[in-house]
Image (cartoon, rainbow, N blue to C red; front, side, top):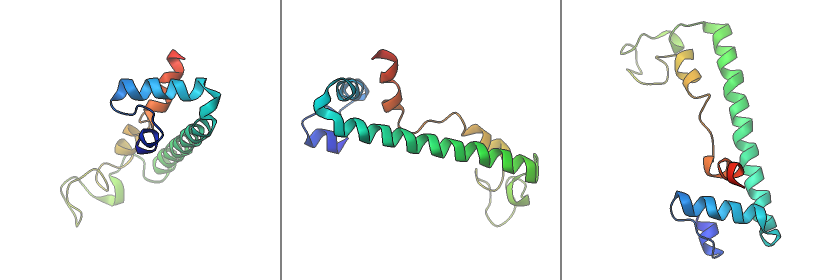
Length: 109
């Protein structure tokens, strides 16, 4: 967002960001930003694929057991999302998107 602001593009709130992303994808003058946006979306997609593979691997390896064999609130790590909820926690992350501001404007473009 700071890079966009330094280039004179609006990057304030969500609506400004959406407008700027639409402008980037519509105006050939901002080709470099479009390439950057596409690369950021690809990073998000790759991480999402990793998450999906991680969930499947965890299901195969530990089933529905808590991660690293702990029960919530027990063990060295105490209670928290990592190491206590196992596959359930990782599955909850599958719907999370990286850089949603880069995906949303495609709907309105």
